[in-house]
Amino acid sequence: MSSTAGSRVVVTGATGNVGTSVVRLLSEDLEVGSVLGLARRIPDWEPPKTDWAGVDVASEQSDLTAHFEGADAVIHLAWAFQPTHDPATTWRTNVLGGMRVFDAVAAAGVPVLVHASSVGAYSPGPKDHAVDESWPTHGWPDAAYCREKAYLERALDTFEGAHPQVRVVRMRPAFLFKRESASEQRRIFGGRFLPGPLARPELLPFLPDIPGLRVQALHTDDAARAYLAALRSEARGAFNLAADPPVDAELLGELLGTPRRVRLPRSAARSAIAAAWGLHLLPASPHLFDAVLRLPLMDCARAHTELGWRPERTATEVLEEFLQGLQQGAGAPTEPMRGRKVG
Image (cartoon, rainbow, N blue to C red; front, side):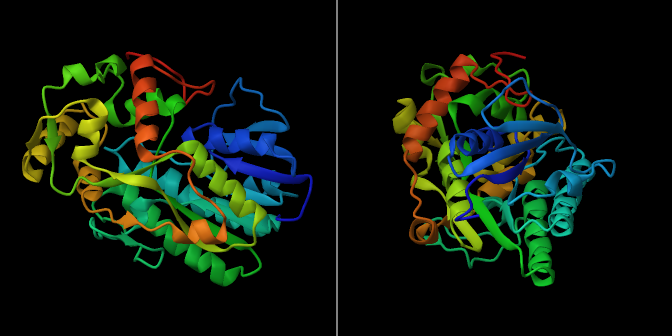
């Protein structure tokens, strides 16, 4: 697609956090002729050059091949985070749905597939230095999210061997945030009834400092720019995507103006999360917490060199924007991204 004007791009999961940013950039790009956004629920949003189709990628009733016919590229973003208490359901959507997308790409003769993998696909790794894309991608087996991302990495290995004519790009971003994603992410990870306005620094008497809680973040729009750069290039393979600096208790304390940090053992934090999750008060599972403590820091030199990509916002700026959106109940005009302050 790198030299094709008026190209046609199909995006699965087009109404979520990443999808809305990717579709917006594609709709504004002069080299893109048309965009087809696939989502389970068609939004009211009408970006330029964009059509919508109501599609569940996991459903055998969905004719993905027909939607992919004539496409110059497919960007696969569709993903379900919930229900964490029913991993068979997320496996059906994420893994089986993902494999249906891969098969349809081959059947329709699409030349480019860009797949949304994740830092969550990586095996446990270091927190004191960054690893490149050669780090093993076996995930943390206890967490459904990591297990599913890692499985799709293996599925893509098989796909590439069987279909070498398809240029496959795997994006492995850090945690993605933007102002408009605040309400969606609050519901996914904090629960429907956690009021966003409670995310105010003055309400935090101290900040828990948990060993191993050092991760990376990235603005969703910066991730979308990397997807567009991949389409314009001839690059193949995996690309780490993250912004500096890494996020830890010290940075969060400075950001929130909460100077007092209290060392909290992993076991104590996990017990509290497990209890809340077991009572269905918290959607985020303790297994995901375990995984986060073990995720490696990522080296993004390959994306800088081969895609000419660098994030425009620091991780600190990303979190500042996200926290403002959380307090304000920010959202976007799609069903997954709807904005609400409470409930």
